[in-house]
Length: 441
Image 1 (cartoon, rainbow, N blue to C red):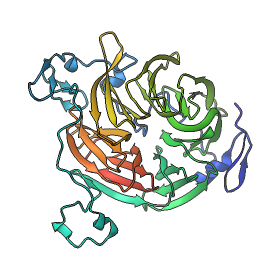
Image 2 (image 1 turned 30 degrees about the vertical axis):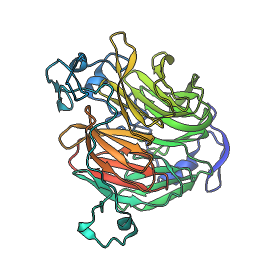
Image 3 (image 1 turned 90 degrees about the horizontal axis):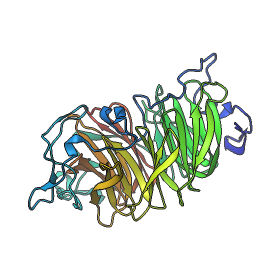
Image 4 (image 1 turned 135 degrees about the horizontal axis):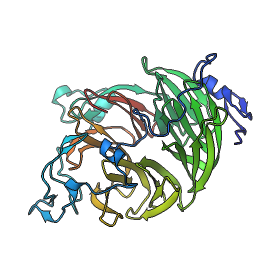
């Protein structure tokens, strides 16, 4: 595998070498005689930062795709006047989330009942609201019990494309369209290092001790524990999305292709380039792995389903009318968001084909990011970022609104951290750290 790169990324150093240690030296102090350990695992480690959110039941399933849960199998009866469709199966105990209601996804519903309309006081944002507690608008960046904003990390000048907290590190990494990679101290919230990439970053994620950075025509991979640093060639175009799982690394690009590397046991080349998956006619904007399946969303308005064992495209989902922006796996379901203003839930039919079983529509508001976790009561909740800067917080599977987060700009990056932490990055370059106290991740 050729690691040579004529492009200069950091402090004028040339990375035209097979083992590019200079980049890792910029990230973490060099340590002598560090054993090469914690290679990329053959499956996501327990604290995976990828936006893969599946229950043990889904992860242990033998199927390659979302399948119909027994509790959701009957969808023929409805509650008159409510628009809800109810399962005839009794309430059962989910292995992860506890008791689940028999109420299922609502067919044909365009959204959950509206909660009280709240928005942030613009005078409070400017620091000169004189009404105080009497103000009818919020003097807070969120309205959700237990969710607090821990810190605002400022320094990026353009929209943040990725946030990562690698395993075994006390440093938070962020990459932006401004061409900078910033490293933040998790204890002080201060930026302790900045690297000029001399290129726009398209994505950033971590898996175990590895950090993966998407750049034009390449992926940078560095290990924060061993200082191992690689420049992975193969992608054609800007790398907009990265996913890791089942011993493989995937990078979706602006050309519509998905580059694939396989994790190896060799210390010199821990990632072997396998192939490039072709099929999308537009930029690949999001990737996610669920079970034995890779899902890819694109500007071409489709979601492609790839079988990991064969790396073949199984089917193409075509229900969105605009760019697919984010994908999320939950239980036996696939959730997708789009610039068309919808969030769709896909389930498996008896035939095995995937079909939209629920659509939530936000009028005149495109959806930019999805992520999910469990609240303090171990109930699943989903965060949905909208164009107007709000993030809706909903229960699953009912999509009943629980609260909101707010920003002055569209939040395009939402990343789950350990111990109830949530990181958000918006188009202005602000990175915020949130804590859902008492939550279970």
